Image 1 (cartoon, rainbow, N blue to C red):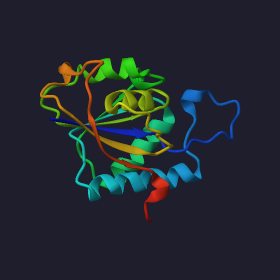
Image 2 (image 1 turned 45 degrees about the vertical axis):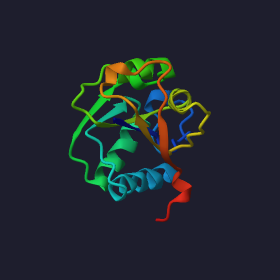
Image 3 (image 1 turned 60 degrees about the horizontal axis):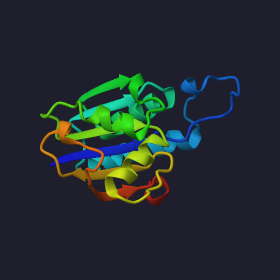
Image 4 (image 1 turned 135 degrees about the vertical axis):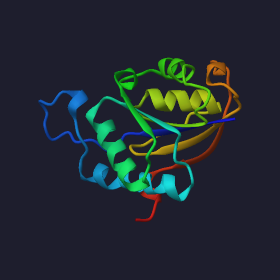
Length: 164
């Protein structure tokens, strides 16, 4: 059994209209929500073995807050492969993960994360900014992940549902 955690980046800022999309940072709400999700990972006993983070600034900042608040000390890999990745690209990415990784966290973007999650659980699932999905995959090896693989959505947390 493999565990996949999908975290959509926290709310980003649109203040600088000239800023490149890749370089947008977090707004005030995002800076509040991201640490809450980090605390949640610790409270739920869901710290990952490995964390992959999109190279976009808003994802990197979300991950920084999550790491700081959760006490996560594992490996974090920042990759451009997750920026604007489709569900298919995300699925291919996951299929390359080493077998010794039992629980993995991806910090990324919509629509790719929502599409991947929906395809895994068989129903559309909305991931608002800073939402965290906990998915159990019936796999022994990440490379066994296929288009028809069905998983169980154990829990979905939206930051607005959490107490401070």
